Length: 432
Ligand code: GAP
Image (cartoon, rainbow, N blue to C red; front, side, top):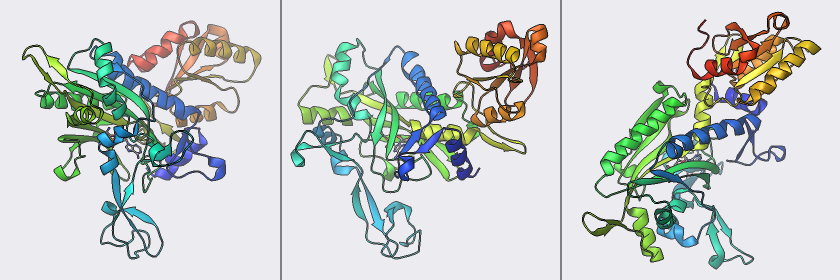
């Protein structure tokens, strides 16, 4: 699949726009349109349901984006969140040093400078005075908001080790080379779980979370053959990690990371204890000793998952383009049309759409040839469509059309909500 075709569909149909589009865009920033925002909400909701609501031992939180500057000293970001970069002496383009081969500019073949460090955190100023004393950062990961509130959550939530804290929120990185559409952005969203454990349980919990996370990707409809787990080589490990695996997807630009699952040991809580002077330990009743919990982290990028879902669902057929989204994530669940815009048909279709809207995301469309209306829904990934036609006026049945097979069956209009529900969620697609 050529990425430029997907980019065009996403813009044309209201999934993704370049940020500040009328001013020519801004590199590494993207806006989600009416359908994109629904897809994103579905992904975040499914993650939250899976990681928080379906578990007794995980609670959520929502930290501020701006934090005390010492947080980033303690976390190691001030000292080590840099990318080495090189500049081309001829065309002046800039690249990550680890992404160039033969010390030649990938764009023009020109000579490159020696690598220099490039800070990835965005700086800003707190209050009216600009200067070193008021410098703070836009958070480069949401995880630190969880670590610095660990003590409060432990005291207030009646949780005991092992337990987790989950968060979804924006993160910012001044990436040298934002690229591959939304894959590497400068502003993006993360869904992170920090799971706190006793120091002896690392391997067991690490394996548990890798399995859980892989299962989730398959559950939301990503094709299994396009997913894999890859373990980091020792030289790849982040400064805080003893072990890390990436969940990767097979994009047209190669296998790429969607999520990192890391054994962060007690690095973060120990560092925050050291820098803040506050006690972030737990008491073990059996041994009568206090200990600093270890952490298994599952950190996923919302925008990368969205791109994955779009790429994975995209198919071109001779007479149509179709996004084969799972009904669980499709931004619109059901399209409703009158065959013609005539009053008795349009009135009935309007009533049916109002009934369906109480339970599903619907889209009502009464203009244009019916075939074109179906094609439009196929292209945005709507799993089924209901059409009111002349037979409806005689026997109160409507057609229910399946996006994937394009088959149509007749179902009773009075039971339309349960018919659509069965179609979407019971796995009984068009069993007659
Ligand atoms: N707290 C750990 C952490 O932040 P990371 O591997 O740097 O680890 C986690 O980031 C996830 O965040 C990645 O797997 C990816 O999905 C997403 N992510 C990171 N940088 C990104 C970027 N520039 N654009 C979009 N998503 C990004």
